[in-house]
Image (tube, rainbow, N blue to C red):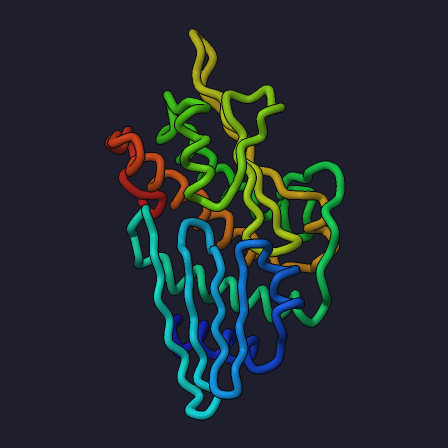
Length: 232
């Protein structure tokens, strides 16, 4: 089964079983769902992608269209597969409320083994976002379906919650005189309650970081500094 077949299977199951109240709680205010006797229409935001799905109840066909300001459509099937997989899991368990504070990946089950992975992603961020400003990131946060944390002491901090229970925040500091640039990736404390596999957390984080850098390059017109892609 390829990725497209995999995410189609996940979303067909979602659209057959769950109503708008369940989905809105998990996908947020940018989600809408409309049902008729013959079809189900679902619209939602997946990072920078605006997704529209229509499921034909009688024929079992699922049509999908999308818009993106970033491009790099090759990420779409992976994003949809992760969204479908996590949505199905979350719909069965129910929504969780935001909790105060954040945790690092090392504090999550399986996080110690993911530390080397996180260092690679952070290294990519630090190099490719050097020179980025809060004003630039405000525009980028809107495109990515996130928000800027104006209270942060970092040069900028962007937060996104692609699915209920999975808040990701990136804090970034540009280099200064003899101090190198740095970045942190942290997660809303409620992520500890949803039992999400570490592989899914890593995959969603990786896609978010990759598309954040892609969006930054698109908006500013800047070229890669050291690596053209996270998958170097």
